Image (cartoon, rainbow, N blue to C red; front, top):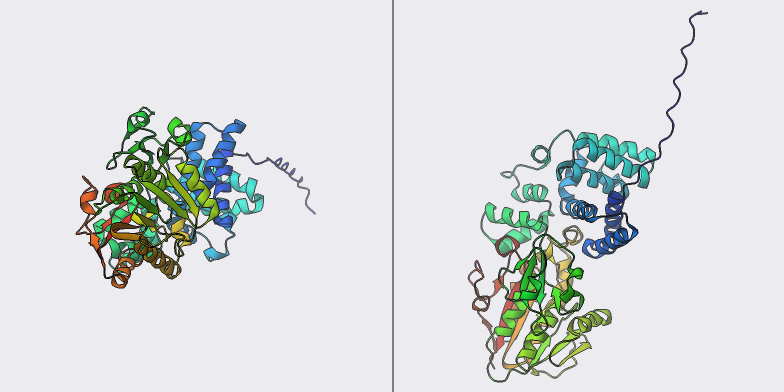
Length: 472
């Protein structure tokens, strides 16, 4: 029996409550809404930020950081998944989604921002303690310490396959796009490695907020009076807010005289409005008008010429949004809730028809980064009949000598040229109009006669437009 005195036990550390960080909690809540409810961040985040500002918890810097954490994490999700997978001892699908969201937020802070390593790890662990509990916070701590051992370039060298062995998979990991999306974009864009890399990089950049001054209701001069506002690149009605900003704080936007609208969408509407028609020019149709941005611009342009716009939208709640966008239009218009494939109007009634058809949205991945992870190749099969049906109705609705604009916010060939080619075969009394001269000053429009816009070339969404004239 030892006579050695026992060492006194160290007193247990008192339990420390986790520190709640409103910025990171809000970012986590937004990511959970995107994952659990299939919500879109551009719809979920603004009300969360507004509520936080009203409560006094947030200032402008907090809002900017929360926005960067949400969008940066969503854009880089594929890359971060590959890195996190290399740091855990189980398949990624076995990691609970809330835990994976915290890890992804932490990875973005470590690899995609200037937040110091210690601060990024400790803030993520505190977030985990608040939203996951102390037990899983230890797992988050261990994983993020592994992530912090290298920078983004170093990790990409480890987790991305060499370009020479598998170009599409390499680009998918490095630029955080699903492989099938990389393949589809590359097919549509054509060319070599430089072009597709420029496009994928552009998809991961935060887009500027672009406003449209609706003719007869607002002017670009009025909008240019806003802070950090500069003219648009191509549209005479466009104004860009170069430092973000809250569009709702712009008086003309709040009053409906101006709106938020990507410049590519403005160019599509302008090209249709300026396409030459033979004979009268009194009746215009927007056959897929929701939520109303193009309809509002078309309605204003029609009013300047003494024409009438009919805006049709199948979903009643979206038709309500169209009516709101057109409210105050300087000329006559009508909004109807109608199925564009089963028209409520007589054939040959219109001089100009626009159908901006539902699609995969692969042209708007800058603004809706989560869409790239939701879409599947089989979605194309679901959209194909609707796209063809809407274009068929449009061609039946326009009179001889009139023009149809087929538009879609996707560069996928199955949603663009393939649809147009099929319908031209079914309507031999039609022909394509060269759309390029109707986008004056816009470079890199290809061989025509249709037009494909690109984020990396034009700074717009990847909008597609084909103009078709009824000839007999």
